[in-house]
Image (cartoon, rainbow, N blue to C red):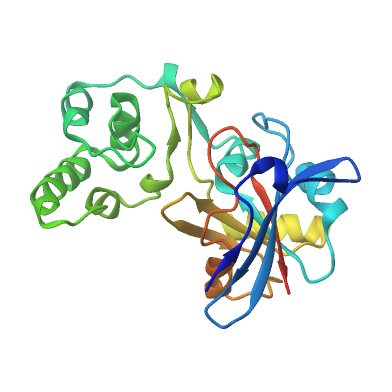
Length: 247
C-alpha cells in the first residue's frame, strides 16, 4: 500500500467552480483498489449552520458519480450545535486533582485540562471516571494506552475543544461532542445532495467511523484505506470535507 502525493500545500492547491481544494494524492488499499482524495476547504463553520448547505456549496461542484464524501465530526458537531461552552462547566475537586496525572496525546491536550475532564465527569459520572483513571494508571506502565477512554465510553474519546493552544479563539471556549444519531445525519446529507456520506472523527493516529449513509458503496475497510493518512489534515487548514474518488 502506498501514497502518491506532494506534502507541499501550494502544490496540492486547486480551484474549481469557486471551490478551493487540495489534491491529497492517490492511496492504494489492501484490496489493491486505488482512491484519489480531495480535501475541500470551507469557511470557518459556526454553530447551527446547515450541513446540507455546506455540502451543496463546497462538495457538489466537485462531485462525480461514484464519489463518496467524508464529513468531519467536529464540523458536524458545530452544525448540530452539539457543543458545551466553557462558562457552563465548573471544574470540581476531582477534575482539578486528576488532570495533573492525565496523559497528553500527540496534540498536547488529551484530558490534561480540568474543564475537559469535568465535562467527562458530567457526562459519564464520577464513579466511572475514577475507575477509568485508576485502571489507566495501573495499566500504563505495561504499555497499554487508551484505557481511560474505553472505560468511560459514551463517545468521550470524541470530545474536542477547550484548547488554549487552538488557532481559533472559539475553540478555546467550546467543547465539541460527537453528535448523536450519526447514521441519520449521513442519510440526510445523501438524501438532499445525492452524495453517499460517512461521518468520520479522524486524526493522524486513528480514524473513528461514527456513521454512514445507507447508499454508501464502500465497505468500512475501504473507507479506512482511503482515509488512513488523515487527508483532512490538522490545524487551521479548514478542510473538513473529503471527497473520495475510487479509481
